[in-house]
Length: 302
Ligand code: NAP
Figure (cartoon, rainbow, N blue to C red):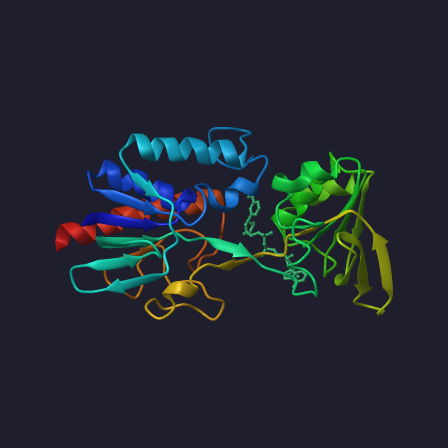
């Protein structure tokens, strides 16, 4: 039995592993895909203390190596169920069953889709949810970004240095993301911002060829020919597999305060998948520290 199982190897989960190892607890980190989580999609982190610029990939790799060097074990399997008993938590993947005294849920979130016909089929054929991963395929081509949060603004900025033309399509007339990024975008000559509009149709043969954009104010439909569409309309917390056990709010976030406790004794939550005011790298790592400290306290009190 491990002392602590951390579910998810994003910044929150890996920070939790670091703190738990420094408290001399045995730690298993279970991750479905790859270490790093959402921050892997950020080309340039400028708002995390110490380094003025660092890529999400470099950041994640450093944290991963730090956690491994401290003795955290990493296994790449998706957790499909968690069971809770008084003195034991059972964590189940399709391949194995693991047990621990405490569990930290740091599962983050997944891409929200637009829900358009053919959206799934066109992923990798012109539709992408990750500008850093796929932007390079669109050098000197025409792309559009949908969304008005920090991800959309940063994606549009990143793509404007690669692509010939970037359209940024947002459903309102003001951005949710930081003003600094919006101001930078407005200065870019190859960026056109289309406000108050939704992408309402994907036009394709084998690949995406064009999109229809509908103006919300007057209903006018504009067809934009392009090579790539980057969808950055937010994320959905990855808590569905625990919904029978853990209390979630209406949007699917684990209900928890700054102490990172869930409704179940011995199960804690850290990072973007919990209810919180500000979802940032710095608050995710902060959660990791709190959740691990609370988990260690819980084990010590048993
Ligand atoms: P977000 O802040 O939730 O923004 C999502 C955007 O997509 C919003 O502008 C929203 O419009 C729009 N949207 C949602 N559903 C839509 C739909 N069906 N059709 C069209 N538009 C839709 O998501 P995010 O940009 O991915 O950011 C997630 C969190 O990570 C945020 O807290 C963000 O600040 C943070 N983040 C931080 C950094 C950084 O610090 N460097 C970088 C990236 C992300 P409305 O505005 O009208 O709701």
